[in-house]
Image (tube, helix red, strand yellow):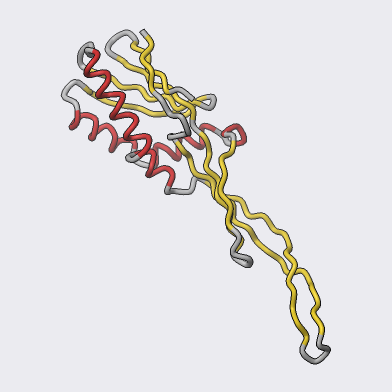
Length: 171
C-alpha cells in the first residue's frame, strides 16, 4: 500500500494512503478474544469523518504550525477507502522540506493522531451466541454438557497505518 503525495497549485500538498478498520472482539463469558482487519466499505465515511474530527484534528493544526514555519494548516478526511491529508503552506517547498513533511505525516499516522484513533472505538456491535459448557454432577458421577448464552462485543477502530505504509512524491 502506498501513501502518495501530490503537489498541487497554490502551495497545497495532498497526501493519500489506504486505511483499514481494526476489529477486536471479546466474549465476556468465555474470555475469548480476536483481532483482525476489515474492509472499510461497510461503514459510512461521513460518520467516520465526523468521528475523526471529534478526535481533535484541530490539535494537528496547532502541532504542524509549531513544527514547520511554512505550514499554515492541515486537514484529514476519509474518502473511498483512502485517507486524504491536505497540507497548506505559505510557499513552495523544496525537496528537503517535503521529505521532512512526509516524515511528519508518517509519524502522525503511526504514533500521533493515528494512534489516538486506534485507541478510541469508532463503533461496536453485540453478537449473541451460545457456547458449550461441560459440568460434572457428583451425585450422578457423570459429566454433561449444556449451552450457555454468550454476548460478544465487536469493537471497530480506524487504523491509518496499514502494513507496508509508504509515502511517494508524485511530480
